[in-house]
Length: 179
Image: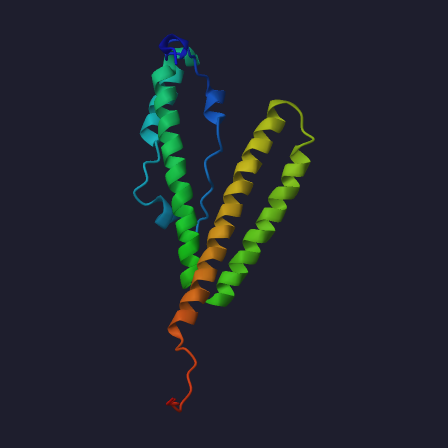
């Protein structure tokens, strides 16, 4: 691998649209937001610096450090939030009353259906606006499917735990065999 063939930071100029690489930031449902977001660096200080730089300089090439720092922070933040969302859904599946957990499963399934339909409709929109809508919807759809899988996994683990707690069926009379 040739070191000179790798682009250096000086050769790469980032723009705001480069922040749309990868999936969008996950949406956190309000009922679990306080638990999921607790202790997560939301990158608000870095974002504030980026906006200040853009306000002062008016163009992105002069704010490369801020763009890079925000992109790195946002990627780390989003990965942590996604993991916490899945963990939270799994815990809900384990601890919620079974009826409420099944209702939550149906709510997530209907949300997935709605997002699927909206994604299909967005496929007809051209240009950057269509791209942004499809990008956002695809990210939300993927995150919601993962949350649903985690919730179902929690419910499934609950069923396994319940079966472990039940004593094995045994006969009340002991049989002794002598040969």
